[in-house]
Image 1 (cartoon, rainbow, N blue to C red):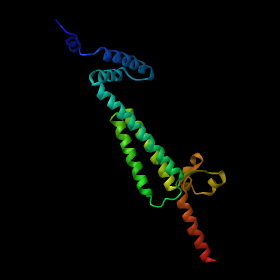
Image 2 (cartoon, rainbow, N blue to C red):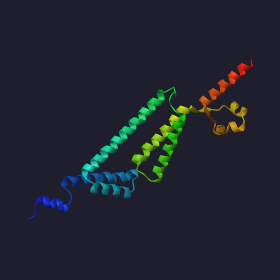
Image 3 (cartoon, rainbow, N blue to C red):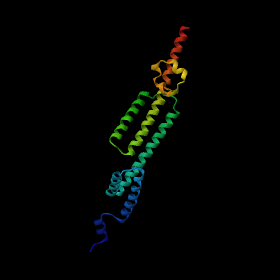
Image 4 (tube, rainbow, N blue to C red):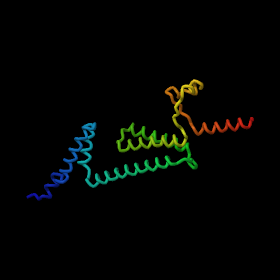
Length: 187
């Protein structure tokens, strides 16, 4: 005669796990409405069915904590750069290298068809790194008036084709100071 324990091991699934799988299956089917392909849903269903519940819970907890800490990192990074007006001790070259490495990592993740859990935060990090480069180097878009466009040579107004010129304001200010000091020395 079989015991209840033998029956559970022969079936391979407990009633609680069966209810959990049915609930998750219904939730996964609703993901199809959001654009997930059936193969992705089947992969998730197989992952849930074949993975130990404790391991699955630890993995989900680690993913949630990773996203939380990444969000807090982004928040603190943006807060620091918004309030920072002095670049003492900060390397603009390092900011650009960080941005370029973020671009390479993002392109790699896209090429490898990585999960959105990795690709989206990396893309947000790349955009924030570009914003930090803009803040550090002092780049900004400046509206180009029609009178200024006519006064500039063609090669100086290439960016003005759409009405804007990209100017490195800190470099221009330094050049203006240099030209002012040179003209004051001549007087």
